[in-house]
Image (cartoon, rainbow, N blue to C red; front, side):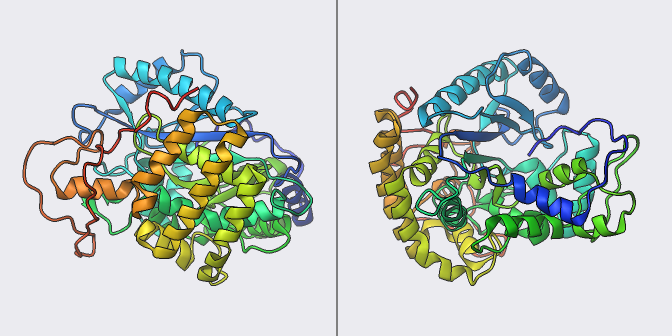
Length: 470
């Protein structure tokens, strides 16, 4: 989510409504054979001795200053609340992507350890209230804009983390790898990925009643800022209309705070020219302030997956998603499996529809989502060797299937079990201060519990930690 604040805003040529629509249509889908893959991994940064203690801005600043001296192949950015993000360069294969990001994460963790800090894979901070680390004009404007819809915006900015998978848009022509099919699949399979990898059931020390509280926050932000477009046979046109009809978050200035208009869409801005005529740079910037679950940026950016437990937990959703989109046989299986789920959307865009809400709230306790997830994991496991995955990666996906999908569970269920049993510290699943805990309850007061599997590993461990990397 981090973006540079931008350079000088000296006068440039204004764009008309027609110009803006043509520009968006021209850049949102760059079609061709799927050859490239990327991942953006976000992490919360915690104190290892007690993650409930806040990390001071001074410590975070010093740690990130040290990190910026380390040569990395991935782009290092910092989120508004101090979360760390590594964005891989486009990779020619799954294993190239895994190898690059794994090496960069090892280097980043080594630097953070020297400062007494650790990276934690959770979709939403269970303890800390949202607190801004970055003080930049962009985030001042974003906070002011999102505050109009309630506190969810600050939680998204400062207390959430994800695994975002980036895929080529696909062929211009129809078929399993065609861009129209891939766009549609991303929005239906996206709900399954939410359910399978939900890992954020706790906020403010209490269960929220949702297995993916991070996804709940996105839903609460609203359709204009965090919703997707209606799905039809012309994804370019649908996305262009969505961009122009979305509210403008801010109008940038060279000096002083940025304007935060209320209720002004980009389309209306092109027509009125107030407070100043919009430019091509304003249009490009406007697109970066929209946060749908699937964002077309030439490629497809899948944004719905919670950050995962363990050092290498992010590799499983990356591998599964790559297999289901880039292997033609697996893509066809996934398409057929998720097709019946589309009825549950009631034609409403993601994530503001019943299917996505059910996925974020119930996870794989939903029987239909569990069945589709099992079918998709089986297809992914067959496809992974065909796309060059190592045995370690394939074994890790199989282990995830056995531990979670086959049992109708997700990592969030482990966290709720740990909380119920008085074991939850958010890092290792080991005992905390030993004080008894009350039965876990959601924010509405209803009990929250999950089936407690026998002899499950602690949350945050990975069955194939030593073999998963190249």
